[in-house]
Length: 104
Image 1 (tube, rainbow, N blue to C red):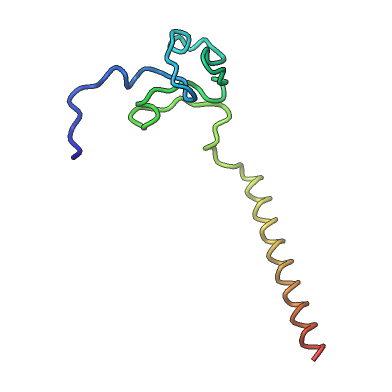
Image 2: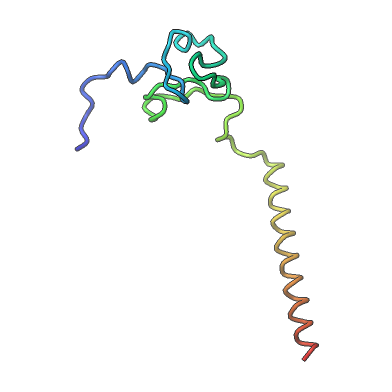
């Protein structure tokens, strides 16, 4: 049963390595480039707290975020490629049906 949260546990806000769970002093300061335990690249996968991972508080922004929307240029290219693919598929179907009709 879900109820209102009465207290906030400090452990929910401790930043940990997302690969191994290490929560040492190097991660707390935010100065390390790699995890001291597993060597995870913290610039690509920054240390996050449980509250950040569950969406209870804001998530840190990264430059190479996979959730960024594609630019208009990339979307336009993707649309044209899809259009050309379906046109080619239609042309092949038309040629196949025409050849089948003429061969009878």
